[in-house]
Length: 190
Image (cartoon, rainbow, N blue to C red; front, side, top):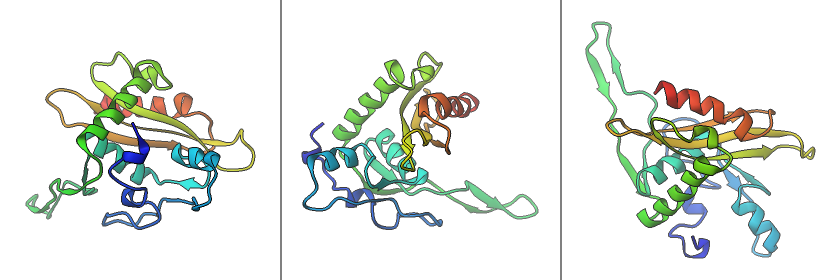
């Protein structure tokens, strides 16, 4: 995957601006000046350095990977009903934008499959469903032993809609140890 040839810039991925959602969410951000060193560029590209991303933002990017690069407009509820059980409003999935090409999404999906098959999320391998994911340990202070555990990924089972999840366990440690087991419970129940 050639990051220099990707179809979108970081700004196109909704960093440093509001997400295209109808709920309150913090902005994800990164800081990388024109004079950034190779080290700073590398740290930023893996989500370190001065990079901050919200769970909903990370989940949206993940679902776009699962959806061949198409970013969907997220919504919280399926429908609302009145006191008689009559549906007042129904919410339906809708496309928001092409976030990446289908080829880029397929490459990222392969990487996420490898994380599950023989990487840091291998507890999710050999399930009755397919899982694609990425773990992380997001440092939040100068004490490098302090980190938030996270996992983001999606599952696929023939005949069911895919589900994407983002799990963050604050101040706990590694994603593989603390966030993956929570994601596994969500996937199993779904």
